[in-house]
Image (cartoon, rainbow, N blue to C red; front, side, top):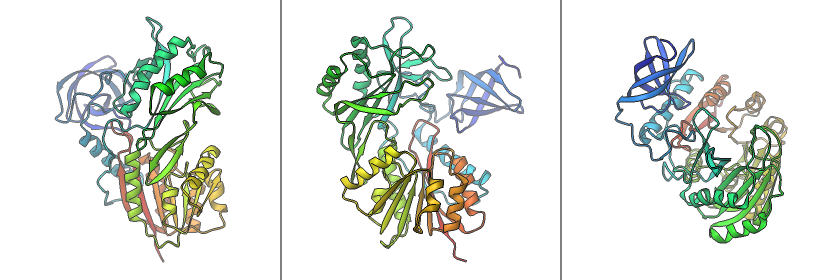
Length: 452
């Protein structure tokens, strides 16, 4: 097989990046935009020693689970990878990925994995979207969207099937207003221009929305007047904000965000609590799926009301505060100081007083706590937990650990370390489909301390 070859290929699996997996002779071939069961005509566009990358040319025989994508730019936009895959198969593949990672990386056999949880629906689920801004090459019109697959070419969007549909009017119309105002669009190659991104956020339970412009500077002429106009035009819009990011590179958010009109936060109802969320706040993008996972975790944990709970990587207290109502004391740890400030605000706003929050790294704060936790929640970033965190848990021996992860590989790696001394055993594995139409999957695992 050579680069440029045209081959016939059958797809038998999907990988964690979302591409279909086939085999041509002894060579593994990855082909984006395909479905297990497809028989295809594929052109080889990249050839490596251990695998090849193919480009779909023609579907010769579609898989039973192949569907027409619910998006008119699905073949171009890089935002979603699995719009052509039936939702039931997506969930089956995600569950299998977790099982395979736990077996292959963690060495765990015969685990009873629960049926995957989902939210209110596989579309219109995202409560937050951040769109790069650009200009069309033909007319120079302001555009907002995601990048074309495998490139830095912007695909203009007026609606997105996975974002909350109530945000679509903002996505479609705000860029027209930006153009009419004459505000310049940032060119990252030349480091010229001002507006970089358009960020939209909605409280799915309240309908409150935030619109945020991310700019290299704050001197946008007539910004205050335009912001007030937006508040009048869109009834659910409660705030128009400006985030300043003058730095080179692809970092989206800068250090300062201020309200230009309205307030710098929206309110959302989560697990019966009212949370204040700012434009840049980390909050799970799928509200209903996150609630479903929290409910499942709560049902698995053992509560007497006397427990001390530590929520590592707690964010704004999304899980800390609902669980605080079931324990004697809850402690949250988060490296982002702004998130800790919001966690305190959310605690006071909901009249919850048995909580403490600490700003700093989990590896520095967890070992120094002057209390012994009965329950520990871990919800680290994709890279997983620092080894110091895992060793601190093995030393302090909490009765129950819940590890929540968006990366099956690092989840399996860390669980292997926690279970290596047989101090802990896995009791429960719960996948959750936080990100339909993409290969990403969330998973919660409960570990119980084994008395010796």
